[in-house]
Length: 174
Image (tube, rainbow, N blue to C red):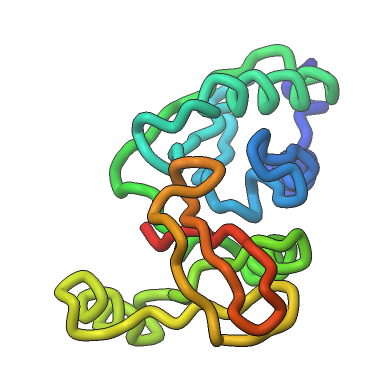
């Protein structure tokens, strides 16, 4: 791809918004917030990725999916850069991503962004000074209970709704 015909980064972001997360295919990698940056360095496209956690088993597949998607759009020179700091946080999940999780039957993280004062709530929960109320993604009830801290993947916990009696995953706040 000649330098004069390199796609702009807005186009690259659009392409990446079509790449699904391998563990939760209803949400894209951009909705998940793990694509941190897209930039051209000369004629090489550098995509910076922050995994949800350093031991995430899907990291290799995610990188392969990013590479396949971009090469499918004609990107020849590509560098995937892994960035561990700052660590990924569920605050980076987009509002659209949270809606997609809920529609898929996974309760999205309760927290929004630290700028909204959520950090104080997170600290209170970590120190045991506050209880976490999880809304059922199926019926909307907050009458739910944690079944297990460990769900279908390491980033989720198992819950059950006491009203509709349906089990569901909760995407844990990180």
